[in-house]
Amino acid sequence: MLGIWVSPLGLSCSVFRKAFFRRTRGTGVIQRWDGYATRSAAKITVPEGHHPDQVYRRPKRMITTLRPENLSKSDCIDISHVEAATIRVPVGVGFAPSVFYYTKGANNINTPFPENTRGFLYYHHEPGYPPAAGAIRFRLTSDDNPSSFMAGKDLLDTRGLPWCIPLLRIPRPKYIAFRYQLLQDGLITESLWERCKTLSKNHRSSQRTFYGALHFLEQPFFLDISSSNFTATIVTEDLVEVARFHFAVKWEKGQQFQPYKGCCMARLERSTLAEHMGKNILVIRILEILKPLESTIGDNEDVKLLSVGSLLRFGNRLVTVDLDRDAKNASKLRLLLPSSTS
Image (cartoon, rainbow, N blue to C red; front, side, top):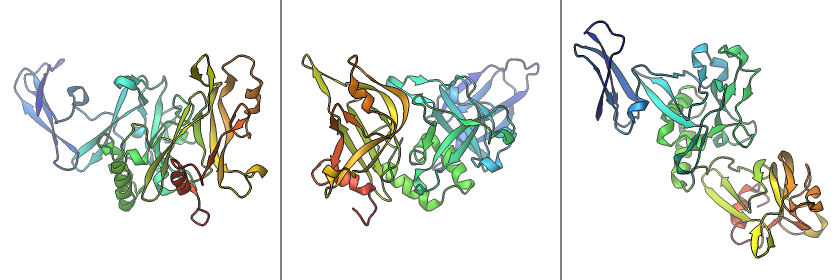
C-alpha cells in the first residue's frame, strides 16, 4: 500500500477528517472509511495497483444504474476533455471503480473526450443480436434530467460510429464497476457473464479485438478502404476466431498503395451473381458511406463504381471470399452461416 500526504487547505481547525481506502480481497471493491486525525495533513492510503491521482476523498462520478428507465439526475456525468474517465458504483459499504477512454492510441497517448460530453452511460443491446453483442454507450443530453435521454444522441467515436465498450471487454479488471452494475440491474445473467469471461480470456491478442465483432452473416461492419488489410473478429457461443484479409492493391514504381480512400459501413453476404452459381462465394456490399470514397490517383473513373448498394471492388476486380478454397479464412467465416447452410 502506498501512502501520500494531502495538505488540508481551507481547514481552520487542527482536527479534521481523514479518509482512507482498502481493497476487499478477491472482489476488486474499494471500501472507504472516515476517521479523525489531529495532524497537520491528511493521509490517504492508495490501494495497490492504483495511481494516487485516481484516489479521491469522495467518490466522483458515481452512477447507480445503466438502465435508461431507471436513471436519475445524479447519474448524469460530464467527462468533457477528460483523457481517462473514472466512474464508481456503490457495492455494499464501498464502491467499485472503472476507468474508460474515448480512444486509447499508440504509446498510451489518449484522445480526450470531446467538448460537451455530458449525459448518461447506459447499456445497449441491438434487437435480434446475440446476448453477448451488447455494449455500454454514452447518451449526450441537453441537461441532467433523465427525461432528456430519449431526445439525446449517442456519443460518436472518431469513425463516426456510436462510442461503446463491448460487453466482451467488460471482464477486463479496469471495468469492474460496469460488471457489478450490469449484474445488479439484471441486464446480464451470471451465465452470460461467465461465458463472456471465458471468451475474453481465450482471446486477448488485440486491444480492439471485440470492437465491431461479427456474430452473424450480413451484420454491418465498419470498413476503411484506404487500408490494404481488413480484420474480422468472429464470435460464436463458445469460440472467437479472427479472419484477416489482404485486399488487392495496385503497384506504382515498385511500391504498394491503395487506389481508393474513404470509409463505409458494409456487410458480407452470399453472392447471387450468375458467375458464382453453385459456389460458396461471399462478397462485400457497401451499405452506407461515412467518409467520401475517392481515388488516390487523380481522375480514376473506377471509384464511381463504389456507391451505396454496390459490391466492393478494386478496379474491375470484385472482392470475393471462396468458402471452398480460402484455406486461411473459410472455416472461420463459415461460423457466421446458419447451421443449416454451413
